[in-house]
Amino acid sequence: MLDQIKADKTGMEYTISSVDRALALLEVLAEHPNAGVTAIAELTGNTKSMVFRVLFTLEQRGYVRKDPATRTYALGYRTLYLADKAGNQISLIRVAQPHMDRLSKLCNENVHLFVREGTGCICVAISETPQQLRLSASIGQRSMLHTGGAPKTLLAFAPDEIQQAVLDSELPAYTPATITDPEILRKLLRKIRRDGFHESRSDKDAGAFSIAAPICDYSGEVIAALSIAGPESRLTADFAKKCRAMVLDFSGAIATEMGWDSPILASR
Amino acid sequence: MLDQIKADKTGMEYTISSVDRALALLEVLAEHPNAGVTAIAELTGNTKSMVFRVLFTLEQRGYVRKDPATRTYALGYRTLYLADKAGNQISLIRVAQPHMDRLSKLCNENVHLFVREGTGCICVAISETPQQLRLSASIGQRSMLHTGGAPKTLLAFAPDEIQQAVLDSELPAYTPATITDPEILRKLLRKIRRDGFHESRSDKDAGAFSIAAPICDYSGEVIAALSIAGPESRLTADFAKKCRAMVLDFSGAIATEMGWDSPILASR
DNA sequence: AACAGCTTTTCACTAGCTGAAACGCTGCCG
DNA sequence: CGGCAGCGTTTCAGCTAGTGAAAAGCTGTT
Image 1 (tube, chains in turn yellow, blue, red, brown):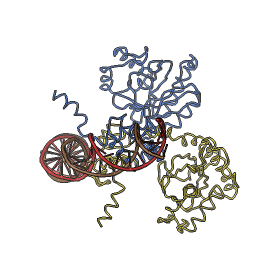
Image 2 (cartoon, chains in turn purple, blue, yellow, cyan):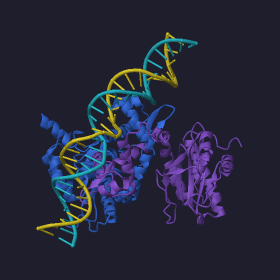
Image 3 (cartoon, chains in turn brown, green, blue, purple):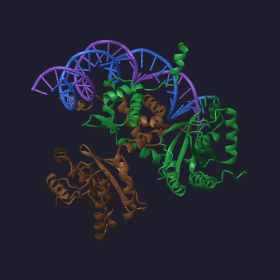
Image 4 (cartoon, protein in one colour):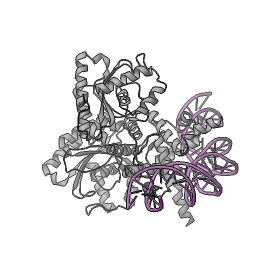
């Protein structure tokens, strides 16, 4: 019992709880814009005074804006500054964005860029199609590695210890098509590595497809996955074939610009 | 003396210093990517242990990324999430961005969108021209209201108490052309209100021009300023005329989409 | 005019943040 | 090859500064 508590605390060893709470508040505000002190206090389980003081601090630095009339809070302009700087620091995003914009225009579907972080992944860039029916995703969204075209592609090219950790962990089913058997998943990952791309259907969001390919950097390491995603209803056999070609073409172009100079399938 | 200290502290009354410090660290990291613990400690005047713990906390939530090889830190992907949400919450940005992209293509110059915050202003959106010689600005950048096309436009339409506060404050000169005399500035603000737009040259960045116009929301209040900005060398009399027309055209279009339904110069 | 529901302020307590100093790793130079 | 320098990490005791509760101010409502 005591060991349990200690084990739980281990990961938090150096966490500064007031900073952590402030970040949590920011995220709550991201999901619930224009909330007041009381509402946020209830959502987060903090006291009203606590929330008031954290918001006060965040407001001083411009990370939240207070509407003086309604006395409600929303994310502030300073968050844009951080992201702008982050986007420029992460050269992958700077390089990929124009390619993604062209690709999404070309295929009329959403184009997503994912990177792996530990045993999960994050969507770091999106180029949206103007079509009404489309997959809605949002930047910064985290997801697991065992479902979805881009996540599985990242997993396929992840180091062994990461693959093993994911295969050993609980694999929740989001749809009936989600692969929850580690052995079947392991075989699929081998296939993805062999093919150099992956097409997935309805395993994360029912009725949606995703065709993904890995992106290497100069060292040949897979640093991201690019995917075309949309409703299965538009994925004819012919269109799927075109998408496969396009996603490989564009992931290759991004990789080349990132310093990768031989095709991923060169050895085969 | 004690009063002095109290007065200084007044503004900080509710600030949680550890949260404030964490935000400061994030901003330092935005300006100095790939810095290590010691470097950041020196830059911010904190102890190494302090910096280590704050970064640890920020990393846990994905706001900074640690490169395990070099043990240096940079902004993380989670900042992108916040900004994406903020951009969607701030309808102005969502509405303005496509207009700005079209405008910058049309005139081949950078297009900036500013909002006022207190007695300063912030650039909240940019659409860049691919031209080599261009004004470099960055999103989230704060500046004063007495220099630059968009800032002066915002000041011209700001409430009296804000105008007065700015006119009463120190007006630092960035270039020889910066207006530092409150009376001259006051007259110029009147002119801007009359004209409904403003053309400024070299008063913020030497050799640069900016042609700006205000954007109203449904209530008729000026909520932002749109500007075309670039090097003076490209600003022929003919091009300046075209820019004035274009900036007014586009600011009007954005305002209309924001619910504003009569032209700003209707009464004249 | 009293009320209800909110935000803001106050205050005393002690949790947990803090700085200093010691530790151990990694890469460099003799 | 071995010692040294510089860095990130860990530890720890002291006391600052973050905290919850409760009361005071607002604001708009019936």
